[in-house]
Amino acid sequence: MASMKGSVKHKLLLMISILILLSVSVVTILTYQHYRTDLVEQSTQNTQKLLDQLSINLDTYLDEVFRLCLSPYYNRQVMDAIESKPVKSAEKLKKQRTIEDYLAAVLMLPRSDILRAHIICEEIYTSSKTQSSPDLSNYADTTWYQDAYSNNQTVFLPAHTEKSGRGTIEVFSVAKRINSMHNSSKPIGVIRVDANYQGIKAVCDRTDFPSGVALLIWDETGNYIYRNNETGIENLSEQIMAAPEYQTGQTSFYINAENRQFLVNVKSLSSTSWKIIDVHSMKLLTAPATDARNRAFMFAFLCALFGVLISIGLVRLFLRPIFQMTRIMETAQSGDLSVRADVIGHDEFSYLASSFNNMLAQIQVQNEKNDYLTRQIYEARYLEKEAQYTALCNQIQPHFLFNALNTIQLLIKTGKDEEAIQSISMLASLLRGMVNADRDISIQAEMKIVECYLSLQQKRFRGLSYTLPDVSLYDTYLVPALTIQPIVENALVHGCELKRGNARIIISLTESEKELLITVQDNGLGMETEQERKLQNALNKPSTSPEQAEGGVGLVNIARRIKLKFGLEYGLTFESRQGEGTSVTLHLPLRGGTDRVSGIDC
Image (spheres, rainbow, N blue to C red):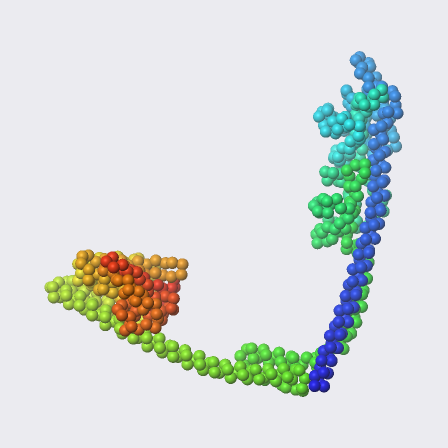
C-alpha cells in the first residue's frame, strides 16, 4: 500500500507541474490580451482626435470656398450688373465685361486650387484658369442648378474627373443662389466655383498619421476625394462600405481583408456629406504587444524545456510498464493470445498487468471452445444440407421420368413413329439435362428442358398450348436444375389434365426491385381455399417434409431447394381460383450463381 501511495504521489507531482505551466501560460496570455486591448483603445482615441482636428481643418477650408460664393454681395457694381436686363448690345457688352472682370479678379486670389468661377443669370459668364470648361449650356435642366436656385443653401457638387493637358484632375464644385440687393427673397442668378483637390490634399498631408495607415475621404456616392492607402489592400473602400457597422453609422469597428484585420475609424464632416476614414492594420497597431507576448512565451518555453529535460528520465522510468503493456496489447490484437505481461512490484501497474494476463488466458480458452463449437455446427449443417439436397433431387427425378416415358409409350401405341422418334430425341435431351440435376444450370438451359417437356406433352394432349418467355439475357443466371420443369408438370397434371377442353400454360419472367420472378400460369381446375391455404403454409415452412405437405410434393421439394440454395426469403408463392386456374411464382434473387453448365438442345 505504501508503494501505491508513492506512485500516486509521483502522478500528483506531475499534475502539479503541468498546472504550474498552464498557469504561467494563462497569465501570460491574459496579460497580453489586456495590454493589447488598452493599446487598441488608446490608439482609437488618439486617431479619433486626429480625425476631429482634420475634420475641423477641412470644414474651415470648405467654408473659405463657400465664402467665395458670397463675394458678389461685396461689389455693388457687379450686383447691379447681374440684376440688370440690358436691351442694347453695348449695354450687354458692358454687363459681360463687368461680371467677367469680377470673376477674373476672384481667380487672381493667391489660391491655386480655384480653377473656375461662373455666374449664371440670363447668360452664362465664366472665368477660368484652365483651357477647358464644363458645358453649362443646359444648366437649367441640371439638378445642382435647380437645387441652388430653389433654396438659399450652398449646394455641393460631387467629385468628377476632368482632362487637364495629357492627364486628368479631380474637381469638385460649390454653387449658391444670388439674391437681389433690393429684395433678399428674389433670386437673380447662381454663382458656381470649381476647385481641384490640391487644397484638400494639402490639408490632409499636414495631418501626422503613422506609417502603414490608410487615410480616405469620399463623398456620399463613394467617389474618392482623397486617398492615401499604405495598407496594400486594393479594394479597401468596398470592404469598408460592405461592413454592417459602417452601414449602421458606427464610428469605430473592425474589418477583415485578405486574411488581415484592420481597425476602422469614421468621421463625418459637418459642412458636407463627406466621410473621413482612417484604417489601421491591427498587426502594426499591436506590434508592441505582440513583441512582449513573444518574449514572455520564449521565457516560458525555456523554463518548460529545462523541466522537460529533467523529466525525461523520470517519465521513461515511470511509464515503462505502460509501454510494455501497450506492446503486449498490440501483439494480442494481431491474434497471438499467448503473450503475457511482466508483473513487477506491487503498485497499480503490477495489478493491471496481472489482471490483463488473466483476461488473455480466459479469452484464449473461450476462443478455443468457440472454434471447436463453430466447426462442429458448420460441419453438421453442411452435411445436413447436402443430404437434404440429394434426397430432394432423388425424389424429383423418378416422378419426371415416369411422365416422360408414359408420353413416348402412348405415341408408339398409336403408330406415330416419326413423332415417337422426335419424342425419344427430346427425352434424350431431357436425360442429358437430368444428369446435371445435382448441379446449377442457367435459366436458359432450364427453359430448354421445359420446352422439351411441353413439346412431349403436346404430343399427348392435342389441346395443349404454351407460351415461353425470352430468356436470352439470362444465360449466366444459375438456378438448381429441374426447378421450373416440375412446376410446369404439376400445372399440367393436376390442373389441366382433369379439365375438359383446351389447356394453356403461360410462363413469364419479370424483375422487381429486389427479386427475379418466374410465373407459371395455367387455366386448369384451380384449388379450393382450404387446400390452397395448407399448401401455401407448407411452402413457407423450410422444415416441412414432402410427406407432411398433404399434396403438392413437387412444389414443396422445389421450395426447399430454393430456400437451401438462396435463403429463407426466397421460394414459391401461388394464387388459385377454383374453376379458373392456378398461378405459381418462383421468387429468386436478382443475381444467381456464376458456374456455367452446357445448354440443352431440343
